[in-house]
Image (cartoon, rainbow, N blue to C red):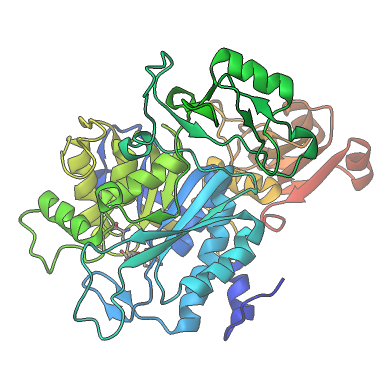
Length: 505
Ligand SMILES: C[S@@+](CC[C@H](N)C(=O)[O-])C[C@H]1O[C@@H](n2cnc3c(N)ncnc32)[C@H](O)[C@@H]1O
């Protein structure tokens, strides 16, 4: 497959592997509402924040939406949008790699972008997400009025690149619109309701389905050039049930396609109805309404409208699904996810995580009525937890930070072995779980109590006997093992030594 090359590409593609694992530290004073809420607002560079999330959320995110800096060469009040082209690609590549690892098998990723980098982004996303998993390049009308002062073209749209994690990812249909329903009429008072004249022709040439039909007025109706869609018996049965009727003068057949039989509408790739998907000026107006005291200069300069996010989350998620935005900006994705009953994780590097996102979400929880609130009958409630990036799990030499407690190391060992998210059991246990028939154990922090050498971190025969049993292969992490290699082999155990056998990066 052809790949995009740029200066230092070789280094870029290994960056994600070398980012250190960090803990996320909750900041209670910046959190709000329900203390048990799963919703997370993380303040920090998303490169490190995404890495910190991997052991807990790999494969769990249903929808990723990101609206990264477009590289427009602007200096906005809250962030800089002026990277050299190769640097922009180098910034995006490792983040996209980690985002892919976080995406659920039935999930999708949506990235807004404009002509500055869209076509390069498409090529690196093809590489990372797979060209076969490309779903759409949605054209979103971002401006409600063209710029007549533009030197050349007035740039009035953004692209939204959409990829499924898997090839069979499907967009959920949208609710039918009045405009789409207006094609259906009921001129003959059919009790089944409105209908429109559907196609009777076979999509492919079918010579055996080319037969004439005699109408009640004595006309002989000739088949379409490809033949009818149905065989003779089926077609006559449909005439009998009234699904197919003769035109008044008896020269044509009419197939009734009923409105009640129609499902939702397949989303178009053209989102130019600003009533439905909003526009940039409206997004700023939504923010101004939320923060009336804030001066225009202090307001976030490049928010997305809530309606755009509502459309995306409608197509890509159900209630309770997990949504992730790692370039959160003013917090639109989190606010809309919250109002739509989705769980969410938002990451923002700038201080506006504190000055814009957290207060915005607080207002949402208190029941603010801007944006999509009325449309989704939002009444308030819920909560979010605020996090900052904390200590690294391993130091530069790969040693475990002594402050790290069992559940965190457990998550890392589990993720390092299985590349799946760790589910912390209700009761503390050295058995981390089963994966593909293998049981994984961790002896650390005296998880077994002080039963033995080093408080239970060393594998001995008594310790082995005290572990939850498993019939198949076992992988056991500990400080050291007192069992001989032969004994371990007979017992179908692979012993791994902490910290050396844990992938620290
Ligand atoms: C275009 S804005 C997103 C706007 C957002 N969709 C909204 O509705 O407000 C891009 C955001 O990404 C943030 N950002 C840029 N690089 C980042 C990084 N490495 N980690 C986290 N956030 C980053 C910027 O600070 C900025 O707030």
